[in-house]
Image (cartoon, rainbow, N blue to C red; front, side):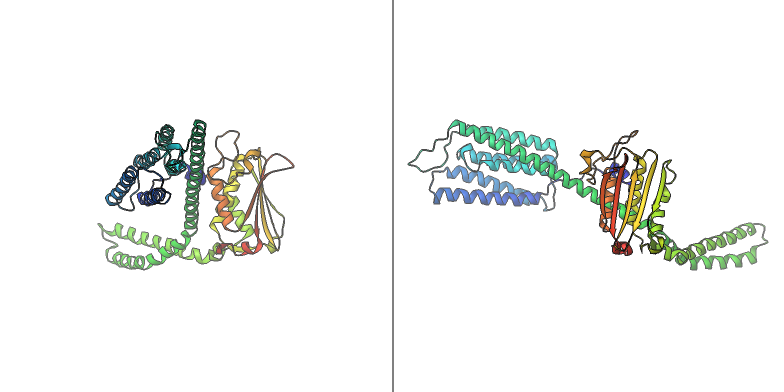
Length: 433
């Protein structure tokens, strides 16, 4: 199965962070920290260790400027380097919070930001290491001896139970947000890889359908030089045909040049004889082209046509539809016990193709997830694996042609049913989609 082959060949996508992205985020952090300190110190007039805060913010700004100057804007960080950069950000923010009240500081939840960024873009082991560092940091913040900047005439007392509650709140938020970011990032990466595989399959199918045209073009281009070779070979045969040393070679050259001309002549006439058939494809011809390669699987493949062929739609050849239907039929044969039925129907409004097998059908817990990339949809009786990427590619290509797909189990007997429905107008012009 082509989809399965691509699935096994594809490597995990690289999701390394671009340094320029982190540099810009850091400048936002520097600006935000500076504005916050200035507002607290000069507008609210709370007592604040300005020098220590300025040194910490300045250190972050200097480190950011050094990184921006040392590397090009397109540089991408290795996981270990990204861990170091995010870890430095986490420690700098932790130190700033430590001298301004620790967990009592209302900005203490910002300690989660580097961890979330890491889980959204880095390998799990590096992200878990950063999470461990963050947990140690918020634990240290709980023991900060520095009071929260407040009005001088008032004493803001933070009870230990509030400290513990804040610690658990930040820790739980960090864990949940990190897990959520990781799952969303993984699904987005998985979808991007699957869509790339879909494009590769579609390009290959289009390339195969264009081979006849390329062969004709090659025959046309080679015709003139081969004709020249034939003329020269004929003249050489007249002069050297009876020569003991070269006569046999000249005869061979003449015969092989004539053979090449015959081959090119057949290639040249192939498109003219079949061009209409290749470009305009009736529905019945399309179905037969889909089913023909799968008739020798040892499973009975039955075609049921419910409408008259005289009124069937005729559209342009669409490599995506041919591949998508072929993949669904192949999957049905893989899971069937003895028989697969393909039912074709059409009227003035729609075209319907239903593929049914007599296998075990879809499990209920997976029906709602069918079509997700790399998700196994059914279990074979004798083989491991499932539909996964192949079904995702088929579903995507068919939906691009305007089809709507419905996956369900048969109600009258065991087995699965896949219904593919197009508006009639789209199947009459399928190749333009």
